[in-house]
Length: 634
Picture 1 (cartoon, rainbow, N blue to C red):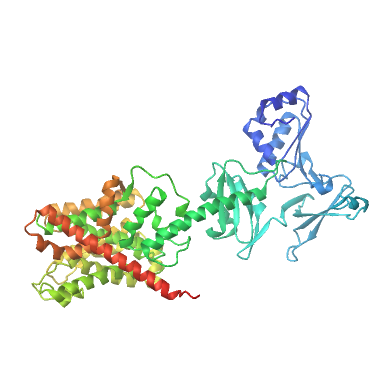
Picture 2 (picture 1 turned 90 degrees about the vertical axis):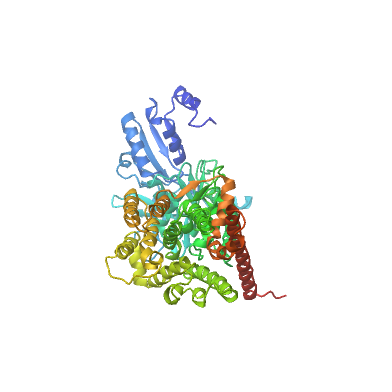
C-alpha cells in the first residue's frame, strides 16, 4: 500500500489481510505515537521490527512493554544495504533491559570491533563478516564479472561491546565534526536533545554545527542544551525550527537536507544581522561591529542608548528585554511584526519630562522642582547598565558629558562675565568664589560621582566583588549615602548643600540598584529606601514627591506605551537632555518678552539643535579616522 500509518485505511487493510508483522524506521514510531497505536486491537500481529536509525531507548522500552502486553515481539535491528540490509538484531526478551544495544550478529555473520583511536581500547569501528556482505561496488557492467572483492564490511559506525556481550552503536565515523579543537558527535547531540524533549537532526562542517529542531521546540533551549553538552560558543551553533524534519523517501533522516535548510535560514538571518550591525555602527559611530557585539561591549552609554533603543524597536518591531547586553545576532532572531503601540523605556520618558520641566522652571513658567534629582537616579541606573558592564570605552560616557560641557561653558565664559574659568573646568563647586552662579551644578555633581566610581570599579578585585553581588553593592553605597544624608557623620556644611555629590549619593545608588531589582522583594526594598531618603530631603513636600514618584516609576514600570507622534518628539528631547541643560541658560535671557511656553520650546529646541550638530560632527570625525586608518591604494 502507498498509504501512511497515520491513515485509517492503512489499519483497515492491515486487519482485513491479517498482517503479522510491521516494519518501521524511528520516524514511523513517532507517527504511531500520534495516532494512539498503543490502544489499537491487532490480533494477528506477531512482531514489530525497527531499523533505519537509532530509536530512543525510552521508546524501545515502551514498545517492548506494549508487545509483552499484546502478545507480539519487538525486534530492534541494525543493518546496511551493503550487507543485504541486516547485520544485527536485539533478541526481544532483552529489549526492555538493554534498549541502547543493536544486539548480536544475524545467524551466519560475525561482528568485531577494530580500534580507531589508540587511546580508546573499548570503542572502535564495527566490522561485519558474513555471506551477505556485498561482492564490491560496480561502476560499470564489466565490474559485474569481477567476482568477490570484499570479504568484510567496514560499517563506518563506532561501537562498543557491553558486559552482556551485546553490541552498542556509539556514533558514526563520518558523523563527527572538528570544531575549536573539539570532536563533535552529531548522533550524540541528537540523543542529548531528545533526552531534553527536543526532536532534532544535526549536520554541519568544520566551521559550524547546524541543527534543525521540530516545532514547537524552543531554539534557544536547543542551543543552550547543545552548547552545555559540547562546550561550543554561540557563534558556532546554528539552530532553525522546522515544521517537519527532512527525511528521505525511505523515512531515514535527510542530514544533507538539514544542512541546506539551516544554511538558508541563517543566510537570511545573517543578512538581517548585517543590517542591524549597520544600525549599531551608525548610532555609536564605531568602525567595526561584529554580530557577537552588544551595545555595552561597543562602548554604548546613557547618551546613545535613547537613540539606540528607538532604532532597535523600529528595526525589530519591539524592544527586547536586556537588549543592551544581548549580542546583535540574538537580537536579530527576535525580530517581530511592528507594534501599533510602541513601548518606550520609562527612563527615556522621565528624561524628556525632567529636562523640559527644568527649562520651564528656569523660564519662570512653572515651579515644579525635584526632577533634576530624578535625573541623578536615572544616571545611577545607567551607570549600572553601561558604566559597569562596558568592556571597552569605559571612560567614553564620562568624556561625552565632560567634553561638550567644558567646550560650551568655556566658550560662554570667554565672551561673557557670567561664568568663570572654574565653571569651564567643572571645579566651581570646589574652588569657585562664594556667591557666584552655580547654574551647572548638575554636570559637576554627576562627574564627581561617575569619575571616582568608574576608577574604583576598574580595579579587578572590586569589579569581581560587584559582579558577585550586583544588587548588594549599590545597597551598600546607598547605606553610606543615607548616613551622610541624615547627618549621622559630621561633615562641613556647604553652600547649595542638597546639590553636592555626597548628599545625592544615596539617590544615585538607588537608581544603580534599580537596574538589578528583578524581584518584587527587591523593588519593595528600594521603595522603602526612596520613601525614607526623600522624606524632608528638600524641606519642600512638592519637590520630595516629584523625586519619590519619578524614581519609583522606573523602578516599578520599566517601559510605557506612548503614541508614535509623542515618541517622535520625546526621543530627541531625551537624547539631547545634556545639551538642553547646557544651552538653555544662554537662550532664555534673550526671550524675556515672549510667552513663557514659547521661551521653553525655544530653549529645548536650541539644545536639540546643538546635540544634532555635535553628533553629526562626531560621526564625520569617526568616519575620517576610519578612512585614515584604512588608506585606499590603487
